[in-house]
Image (cartoon, rainbow over all chains, first blue to last red; front, side):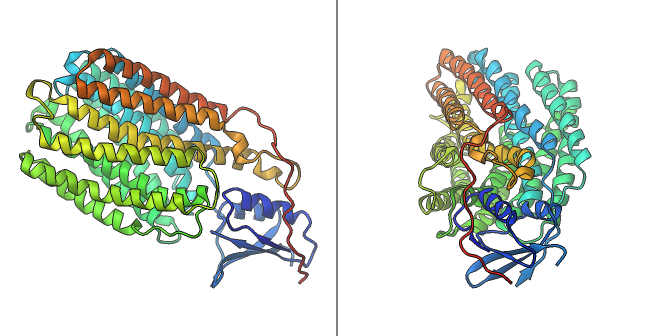
Length: 70
Length: 438
């Protein structure tokens, strides 16, 4: 799954990611383009059983989310 | 570069909300005192009623709000954990009681009681600085907002120390409190603590809430450096009570950094992706107008006569204070309070249900109409106070005080409204763009 969360004001990026994770199958990853690091999303991801990696690249920031059991 | 961050919890709503909800009562108290002001208010800025009014607004309304904002933003935006949430709750109680007691004792000009209340305020400030300071120190990365928060806390320490010293000398007569020394204390608190913190945090809040992605600030770090150097120079020199020939350049020096910040705010708002400005954008523009007026009035105050006639020397100073405190700081505070608190409410009430059911969005939490009325009400009140002071009209000054009461209550109503139950205004938006299976 890929999301483009750039150009959104908080908490819209968080809402879109959490809504998308409902349909995330085992083994899949959610990849989101971001304007900034979503600090307050992380506790919710942890609570729902997901892990994540946040990276800064040439195109900006990105967040990759997957289920914690993987 | 991959960064893995330990989750940072947003502080509980019950910790932050009391600061925001108690703060407008400071403005209401100031308005009540001003509504009963007499001609004496124009004669000297350091008369009891003026001192009480100023501290009700600065410590009651603006500082209390800023404390709540910093307690929220340090963990949520800077990812620095508070030292102790329990300590913050205790500090809130000490702060509200001490400020209330100080305002009352200043109005009565009961110096021993002012000393006791001032000591309570100092304890509150020390607890706040320790708690927020630890959070700022724990912040993960360097940024303008983090540096501004750190600088603001440092200036708060100096302002608090000066204030306690001035109250002590009132009682024990260690040395005279001249107008220059009062001015130093006032500007260290207003420009150093409140102004630097506001400007620095706005470099985070304005781009975030207005979706600014194509424009970068130009003057963030220079604003903080220039402001700190200018304020140090200003406070050190003005405390020696120099004449107008020295005071005017000092006043203009103090204006450089805020005006550069204003240029950045305008550029950021013009470069936004969000089509319509909301209450935060509007409030920042209103704040900028008041900033320019405050700079002009401050220059006039620095010149002295004919702007500050001998028998009514407080008139121009009152107008300057109204524009700077109520107009510049107050307008920005109102707009940002209608962003920070709704987000916090949304985060704690609705975030756990996202993806499971339809939930309100942040714009459903607060009323744009109530927020706009609050901003307009306070702006009208500040304008009335400033104009009445400039023309020397006591009835108009009293009317300004009554309008401040109304404005404070409107702000409070707008904040309380956020806590009422809300419903989702729209169906959840589809979020997927394409499917990639790993």
